[in-house]
Image 1 (tube, rainbow over the protein chains, first blue to last red):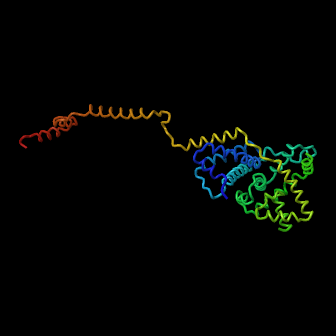
Image 2: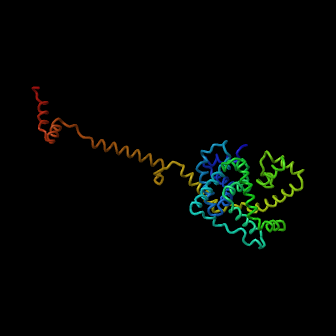
Image 3: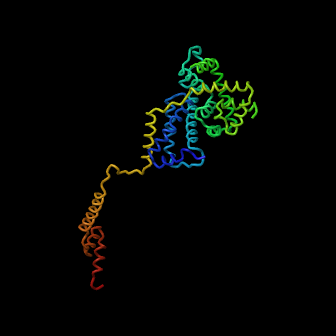
Length: 188
Length: 148
C-alpha cells in the first residue's frame, strides 16, 4: 500500500513551505497526544513533538519510501524520545509524573466528563511504561497491531500480552469508580 | 475462531473490532453473531469500558507550538543553503565587474611604473661590493678585460 505521506515528504525535502505546513497540520496533534499520554505532562509533550518535527525537517530530503510508512517512523521517533525521557526521570530518583494524583480520590463525588477524562488520564499514567506504550499506540494513535509491535520492537504476541495486561490493570485501577464512571456515561 | 481466542483478542484489543488484527476480524464478527449471551455480555461490558477510555481524546495542537515547529522548518531550510560569508556585502553584478576591471588596470599600471631599469654590469658589481665581497668587483673587471 502506498504511503499517504510519501509525496508530501518528498516536497518537504525539496524545501516546499506549504508541504511542511500540511505535514504539521496532519501529524502534530497526534504527536503531542502520544507524548502527553506517555509523559503525563503537556509542556514536555510539546517539546517531544517539536523534536520529532526537527528530525523530520532534517531527514526529509533523504527519506527513502518503500521501507516503513513515514507516520510509523514518526511514531517510533516520538515513542523513543518519550521512553528516553521516562528513563531519565527514573534515573533521577524514580520521579512520578507531576500530573499523577491518586486516581481513587473523590470516588464518590459526582463526575462530569472532564473529571472522568482526568481519571482515565491519571490511570493511564499509573500503568507501567511498556503497557502504556502498547495501549497508546493501538487505542489512541490508531496503529495496527503489526505497526505497534514494530514501533515497540516486540512480536505481535508480546504486544497482545502487553495490551491485555494494560487493560486488566486499568480496570483494576478504575474499579472503585468504574460503576460511577460508566453510569455517568450512560446517563450523561 | 473459538471462544477462547475471541476472549483473548477481546481482552487485548477491546470491543472495537476495527482495532483487531486483519486476519481475525471477519471471523470474530461471524463468531459474535452466533455467540452465546454470556459472550455477548462480556463484549458489551468491554465496549462500555472502551467508551470510558475514549474520553481521553486528542485535542488540537496549540497555535504557538505549530508556529514554533514551522519556524524550525524555515531555519532548517536556511541552514541547508551554502553559506555566503559576504552575504551582507553583496553588490550589483555590474559593480562587481567594474571593480574587477579597475583593480586589473591598477595592477598593470603599478607594475609598469615600478619596473626596474635594465641594470648595467657596474650596478651588479656595486651591489656585490655592497655585500662586502671585493671579489664581485674583481669578477666584473675580469669579465670586462679586453685582453680576455
